[in-house]
Image (spheres, rainbow over the protein chains, first blue to last red):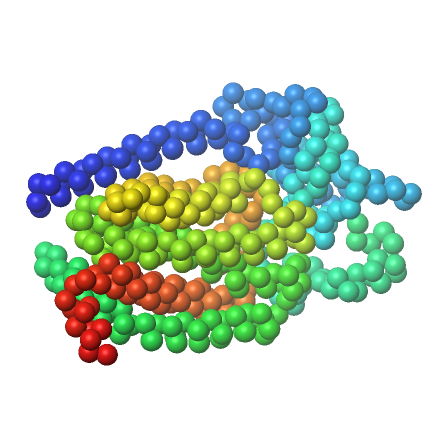
Length: 166
Length: 245
């Protein structure tokens, strides 16, 4: 290879590898800050090597699965509370407002709010987290036993079984 | 070793080669896009949870995949332009950048339109969304930097360097959903395991991805031809061609 080209090649490769390692180190150092949310076990057991626990009163996001049968609604208002779980500990979330379409028991959600005590969060925003699985309703029914209700018929379904969906 | 590649560094050869490929690429691309998108948008079953809203996947995923694919193509061209100082490679960087920027914008906008009904928000600053936004800024930076100098050579050099450095963002985008907790779901098809998408939805998606790729190649061919003519306008072969017509 021509010495001038070789020089340029070395310079370019050097610049890239230095920058890559700098950014890699930065992302590694910021690891905990880049996470969008805590999982319930991270909230209870602490995060990372140092087991850093969020403090009561801290604003944070929590993400986990809605525990089956844990959703309780206040009949007179939009207040709702439910439990979140990932692998062990359970965290209680209270919220007042309209929940997203995909919110249901067994579904992953991310809630933003304030930590009230060790395992309770008063949420100001609830987002549904979708998983990466896509399948037609018939396949889902055969595989998972989930019956798909089109949004147009959801009102009717809810009216007939008041305690059914949530 | 690279002797057989040398003729392709000549602007005239590349100009004619791109002209030969362009009609095939653009017609194949449009056909594939029509097939993939009409099949995907109208003839696939709805998703068991998202209903019909999931259909945006047939535009969102191809544009997102190709926003990254286009970037790697641009970075390779930039690398060749910097190390071997091939003029055609330098022009390709600037030919590729706007196409990739548009794909990135499509991915971001369709993703937001899907996020509102499904997640409940247009935007969150999670790792995947943020790194894809940075990709858009990298494309725009490459375009802006190339035009920011009075000397066109200096501008192209600076833009190439930025294009190469930005490659670091690609693995961050791809693995962001694995490395960190994100609202964005994990990969459905770009993984080694079996795709977690039903075959009836997967095939039109794969066709759409191919369509976006072929259309990208066609647009780059077209833009590269224009760039070659613009930069070589005082060369005898361009003048002879203009007189011949």
